[in-house]
Length: 111
Image 1 (spheres, rainbow, N blue to C red):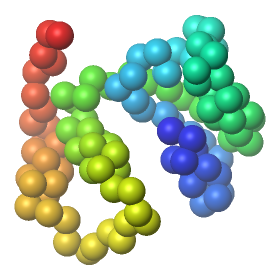
Image 2 (image 1 turned 90 degrees about the horizontal axis):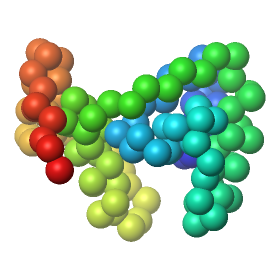
Image 3 (image 1 turned 120 degrees about the vertical axis):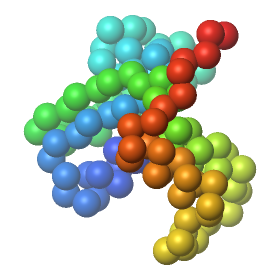
Image 4 (image 1 turned 90 degrees about the vertical axis):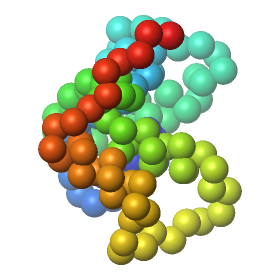
């Protein structure tokens, strides 16, 4: 989240809309939940950048409702080096984007 917020700031965006599937992090950014010591510094870094934006909205989105972001997050966790993104996405990602565009989502699975 911090990297995405910093990129939005560097691109001179003034209005920020944060979506995430981690309800705890969304609540921390909204200021409705206190943070644990384990992520205190990271959350403080996020919160310190937020005043640079004119407007900020947050929304929790179940990962089943945004498969493209979930797919990219999983890929990002696997990559340990600087990644190069190609013009043509993988067939799996293309299918996810196409389904998302057409409004097809998975139903939320109960844990």
